[in-house]
Length: 125
Image (cartoon, rainbow, N blue to C red; front, side, top):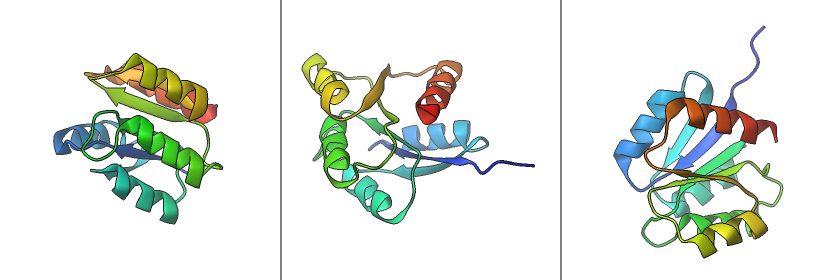
């Protein structure tokens, strides 16, 4: 008996981060990666996603702006939403917690075991 893998959408403008995340978590999850927030929104229009993880600092749209659009366009997507970033604006992150269902902010570089625990918690939420 195998249960179906949960799907994670991971958005980061840096290819190396996408590859690292996918190689780390692909055994346990169906990992979809996007190099831009716009591409991430297209994925959400066409595919079921259990967890959204986004970088904060990206060209054209920040992670918080992306979560704002997700909240507006896809309010039924489960509330497990994470931001992983080396950069944070405390006001922006607080806004994401209060309005856009941010579950946790994780600082880069992330620890594999800690991130795995947070992902499990967020998906079960």
